[in-house]
Image 1: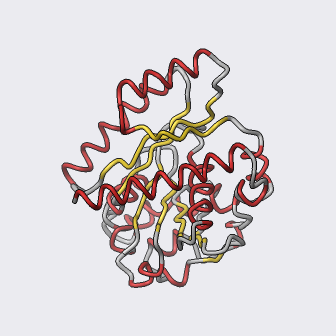
Image 2: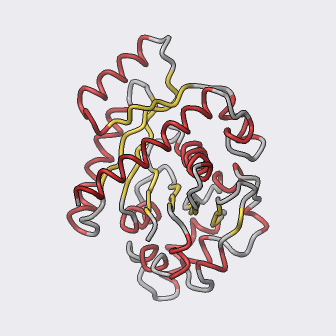
Length: 263
């Protein structure tokens, strides 16, 4: 069975989608078969892989509303070994659509869909979430074994992280006791600024080994690659951003191996 990892932070602009795409692509370079689930109605994960979700009738919405199987909604990307289930704005209406059909808008809905045997064709499944803690994000948390939290090095970052950790603890108590945090990832790091260094030190002092050793630098190649619909390791393989995500991929593999040894 694959490792299912949700990448989430209820705060926007922290590099969540960038991390999802580039970490997945880096793992694919290590010959891992990777599936991305775009659970954000904005469809940014889909667009960043060069897929226009607005013209697709086979998306996360159709999967969650039971009209299509997992295999039917998966699309191959231009990155070898990396596939995607796209999303568009119809995903924002899934919860209300279920209520209109007198169906239960359950937080276990995605988990049930991922029990499909098709999932066994992948080593890793990444779920990109919207910047909120609503129906879609809760479904992702309940369906996952691991959670990766991207966190920008800025003043209010710790406040948002505290709120998120409270929500995670509730999910662990009530719906998914096996969910564990694979790591907190510092993103958009500019080591030249005092504020960034102070936030990084405070996060590491507070959360110790929960914080990834790898930090993602503020590197122009990352947003440039997204604007061209490709991961940074295809756009500029030797850029600081590409090398950082390659390092993160190795660290994720190692951390999951260690957790599974301890289980």
